[in-house]
Length: 492
Image (cartoon, one colour):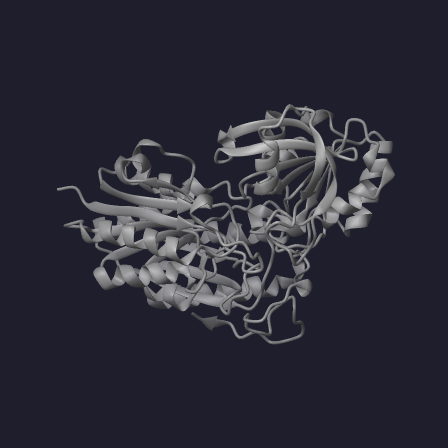
């Protein structure tokens, strides 16, 4: 008889500094047989394909995801959780669960989502094998360690190994079940917060650190997985920080020793983390980009890093746009500077059905985060529009011109890494001289266009300058907010 493994998951980075509540309209879900019939490049797809290829029976449930944003709506989270648990209760002769979790998902009024979900699973199946993939930016908690048998995290940032991490998680399940091996896990907390823009795995120190993880997995037959989980710095949570995590094949002593060794190694590299790309304060980034254009070095791509929706910010902070609109050289660029993009559902609703060329007074931005900026009030011209853009969750898009600056606006909270958003609106992206994107590090799609890229240290809910964020709950001391202290490298 085939062994039966239930698959499902929840995936979200929740920014507690973002006042938006991630709601039903922001979340997309794949359910049941659709999970098997429509495999993608995500970790859940890697899990499913690997289990099927090894003649396992997959019991699909649901995988819910959303673009990083504020905390999840409690009622909708509980609705999805109960749907998942109901499916779980109805399964008989189940051998294991293999989940695709993020690790830094938060629910308004509850807190950590993963620990809450896993605790409820254990109430139904106290002893069943549970293995999960995790995002590299997972925040490991006591509940997550207590209620799961094994984790394996992504080893690439940007996350190009999501499918492979799913394969890894599934292979842990397969070996554990086929050989009767009990995974043993140990995790050590490191008091350190770091942004993705300082921890990309193609550069040091993360390149060497992740190479060590892979080497340990390859050379030591007693190890299932080694991971560095970096936490999520834009969440003000007690447990935030980096975790060194090791899963062994029923070898508790090895797991503890190796996890502590990896934690000490990471801590000793703390001063090596820095912005690897060209990083400037906002006005300096603006002037540098103008000089690049004068020297025929373009397209220049500027990251509005403090309001990066793929890091959970609201995508409606206007401060950098206002700086651009105050500069005559920017407003007279030909072709115009293009800015991707602002989340402003009311404005899109107002303009989406109007004729191209319509000019009217608008209020752009600061519809959701009203603390960090205020709306731009100006006359705008509707340049183009695109309804139900499939590559960004069927969002409606408009392109407007404000005083010589072109701005993409969406009616959904979407990532800004894809130049096809601009192309859908009729923009010849490669011919633009300056492009501003609400991103941190450039994803490959945008990076391929840039002759030069600059990261502007703007403000917002994904502020790269952590000292400007109002942390209240995070345990201190923690590096780099605090310096010159001896760390408590504690087992979780």
